[in-house]
Image 1 (cartoon, rainbow, N blue to C red):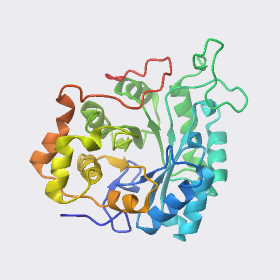
Image 2 (spheres, one colour; image 1 turned 45 degrees about the vertical axis):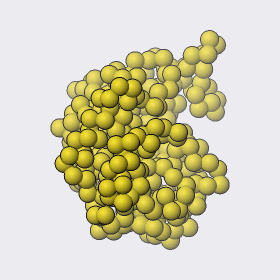
Image 3 (cartoon, rainbow, N blue to C red; image 1 turned 90 degrees about the horizontal axis):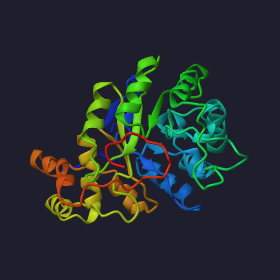
Length: 309
């Protein structure tokens, strides 16, 4: 098996449009259960990871911070990402400050707008609802206005770079018309059943780093059980997850697999060199009947303008 080093100093990195280096594989922390997150983060960093992805919405940033501290690795060696939730669109610095306090950090390396969906603020509700059960969208505010607020943050020293998450090409085009800062990254659902080739190419053409969340197909997803994925894994004497992660990296995408199992975290950080034919096979996997699917699709009640939703 041909392998790169795990996500450690000297590992493979990509360069953001800010000039900063971002490790190609990071640990995702979405849906990690309470009590498991701190150990997972500590284990990941000790095994060589230097890239941790989190979000205020996940409700576990305090544990992420505990794991960072317990690892003993200097802050400057780490790349930490968090995200501004919909209820903070009008007050992004306040949302950032809440995350920094929970994480126990003075700054993050990358701050993303979690979804291009401003939400009305109603107490502590993370997803405020209208009386009819629909999500309470702040229709008097736009994602473009949120970005203008985001552009103020690098000057504070609290963030090194800003970006977006879950933005389609039309959403990005509108943002870029008046943007003073081009987003450093766009984090979206990416895996062989949802490769989003056009979106990845568009982002790369604009200097925006595509990032893959749920790269293994989300909890219970069928991607790792696909026969072609398993056959490629057998050929490289590795896990199917390593194949899917390596496919993402070879596309020029930073990949954020989630796990709380130390052995799985470690193997996820080891990349394999896929052949041109293997890459083509994975690139085209979604074209098979029933394969093309989006697995993460909250019912926002607004058109996010993705081709498949």
